[in-house]
Image (cartoon, rainbow, N blue to C red; front, side):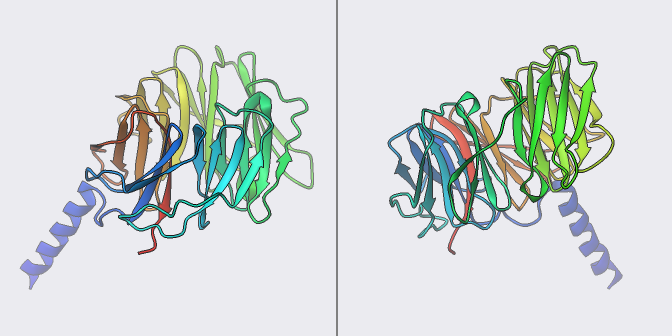
Length: 323
């Protein structure tokens, strides 16, 4: 009996040390490839697509709010929402007309979507920045008075619109804290601010600042009276984006990516990725240049699982299946 108990314990420890113990959830990945949304099974194994939608306009970004039965697409000069009926692990959702079409008033060629709890944030740079209520979709313009060019907008806890304002050798975090005035935290003393990226996980905000020669990583807790705290200086530049992870951050640069965790290897790895999504089972899916890179975030070695997507892959979202 002692021998059996020891064997069970050994097996559990080996599983804990080698990554996710359960297989990936049965999800579909929606990948924007040119004017199409192409659907692939999630997971680490090589697999072809299971279907595609033709949108008739370049797919700039995709988002599926948690628990929602719609996939939002930023395509050309429109924001659209498509129903997700009929999806299975081996079958794409039914190709039907969008349920919602919102005219943006111009082409949004480099825009982003961010899903919150009840809102969607649409950032089209100089063209405009809006929130959209998921229950009753309509474009609501964000007041950008006083925001300099390059300001980053995020949906924080309770769908608060948070701003990161770049400045000369500094940035300012503006966090709305009703009923009083917004909290403003200035982080100065930076050599340069070439780019900003940020992401939330619950009440934790990560901020990456491309300083031209390296990238500074900061963290901040929602509502804190203290300014964002420097976590690390990363030997990489040409920052593209940042995603929040359980216990860390995923950063992408022009030709490299990094899974950052405190006390772990901080050397960026080679790869050019335009977007990534983290699924509820702690897998990260990165897309770019015909490559779909899958990382098991519970694997301490973070082994790379390479899969193939279309050469025009630029954005990715995940959706549940009906099985």
